[in-house]
Length: 72
Image (cartoon, rainbow, N blue to C red):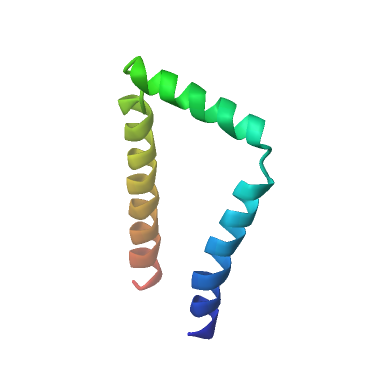
């Protein structure tokens, strides 16, 4: 239980620290590029999102398959 509590506190703090370590110029340039990409209608590609979802389903299927075989 304590390990999960540590994760709930440490992970957000480390994310904030990592973001603060990015130089302001780089962050501003990246945000401008992302805004321009979204303005062009080129957001997250459906093909890429589909591949990620398919990968998760395949991984879940393998876990179920190996678990079922282990308990036979």
